Every structure is written in C-alpha cells, then in structure tokens.
Length: 188
Image 1 (cartoon, helix red, strand yellow):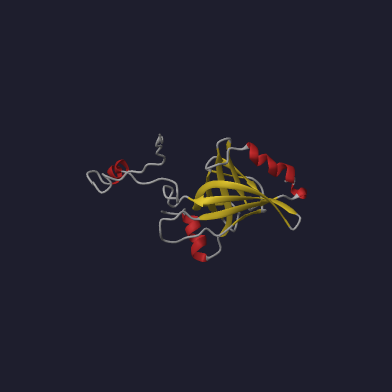
Image 2 (cartoon, rainbow, N blue to C red; image 1 turned 90 degrees about the horizontal axis):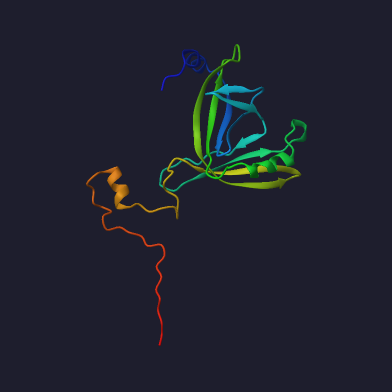
C-alpha cells in the first residue's frame, strides 16, 4: 500500500499527528467517532469528536480461536452525553455490527487530514451497561473479524465448504454433523 507523499514525509521525519477513530455499521445506521476536536469526514462518513472512547488492545496471535477486544464509551454530562443517551443504544441494531478501528493521520503544520489506516476490526457481540466509580458507561464486546468463520460452537466445515476452498478435495466427503436426533421409543 502506498501512502500519500506528504504522509510519507511526515512519517519519515517522525512528526505525524495520529488520532484514533472507530466506525460502527449498525443495521439502523453507520456511526463514526474519533478522539479529536470537531467533525471530520472520511470516506463520506462524518466522524464525531469524542475523547471519551477507549479501545482495549486487540489480542493478536496465531491459531484459529476468535479473540475479542472492548470499546468503552463513558457518559459525561458536560459533553451532553448523559446516561439516558447511553440507553438509546438499545434502539440500535448493534448485534454483529461490523466495527473497524482506524489510525487517522494529520499534517502537523496545517492539521489537514492525510490518511485513514484501518487496524483492528470485528463484530459487536454484546453491549454491557456498567457503572464504575460513579461513571455510567457502555462496554461493547467485539469479537475479532480476523477469523470470522471460526468460533467454538459456531459451525463445522462440510464437504461443500471444502469444495469452495479446493475443488476435488475429498477430505470432508464423509463428514457430517447431526444436531438433534429424536427417537420415539415405546415400552409395552
């Protein structure tokens, strides 16, 4: 991937300004937040400023197990984000909403937007309402999208799946899984 020339220059000089952003694609709408001042538009989406969002470090590693990370949004009355507004998340279609964390790069001289680099991504699994130390907050539990088709209890590979991967491979030809089997047994 090539970066814009100005971004490459400020990165080489070590003076790039980096902020974080997050995009959440709910069934009821797409929302963007970033930890800066003022609204910015990236890829046609307006990202609202909110320095109150924290993202846990995504778990990176090898293997096939799906990992998780969290995104927290704390209510602050002086910003207009009251605990009542946090409850409105229940009106959104957030289950399995694709979520992407970005690094936004800005020019240190004129503060113009240079580039958005996607980082961790996943799908919102659950959202917990929490009160810690007198602060009300939402905690979104995001499961990693790195391996979207493997999660314990999610699904099992089949012969048809293997044909999509490698046509003619017969490894799963006799594999099957029966979820429920009923027997009608009568004793006379």
